Length: 369
Image (cartoon, rainbow, N blue to C red; front, side):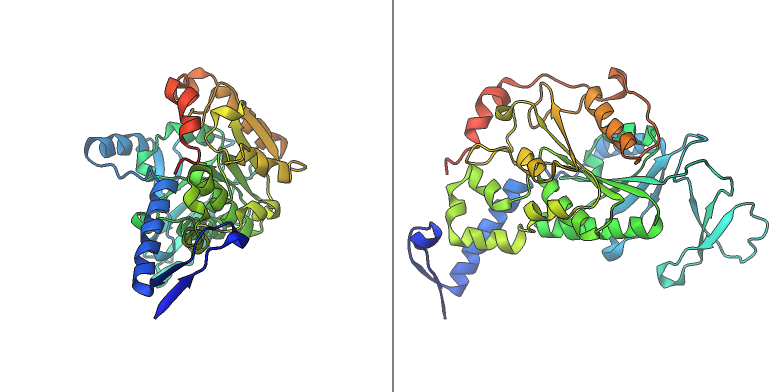
């Protein structure tokens, strides 16, 4: 049996190819591996002293496992600080007794798998304008490979944080990423039905995050889209002419395309887009020279926000000004009540743009292959 791959002028491809099913599958898998490596290059497992260092930093927070489907590795992080305005301070307690009358709190049964006897205990004290806030960090690496100071700013401003690792990182694609994020979103919404949820995405994680957030169809779920893209074909075409091959298009459709460039219009919550103030300093640019993030913003600018990152390229950390602008948007849209304005010491050091990134990388990522 053979597979005929027709490549003609009508779809901008160049030749006819006749191969066996087995050969086609081998070539298909090679391109799938290539795209997975290119689109998700930085997935890093840490161990030894690096892991110990991360765990020591995490010890400053309250941590619990977020019980998700497929035994997804997800944790729920909240502040240990006592704050009268602090939200999301509920505690989940597993009990072997039904004697709950002595507890001076609001109590509800927490429905868990395997009939686990667990309850959720929250304060009876009324907090004015009480609002639950959770931020889910959608990373392109393990959460152990991500400095807590990136998100500690949000903890200090009333957010709890959810971190998760992908169920099958060695086979990570956009579609598996979106499936894992959807599991986490549904679990957080189940536990916090009234909460304001923000998904923080960056670069490759924006595409699956757009899809997962749009599919939730929830006006209280918002998205930070930091220097990202939504069309995997345009992204692949920006650095390789091989994207014009039909077999590559098939791989993209099967594993990477979620129609996020259209789904962005369906997100009911707010979206904050971030991109460098100078187009030439961001590597998220199509082969036509258009900035992917700006194009997404233009589709929804009537209701969403664009923050231009000064003196930044694709890899530059957020400055205090960027965090303050994001927090102000949260406040103006009633996602938070107020925020603490940040200084230089509250964020990670922002380093100058490297010479290579500023003058050479923009040209090297164009379609040379």
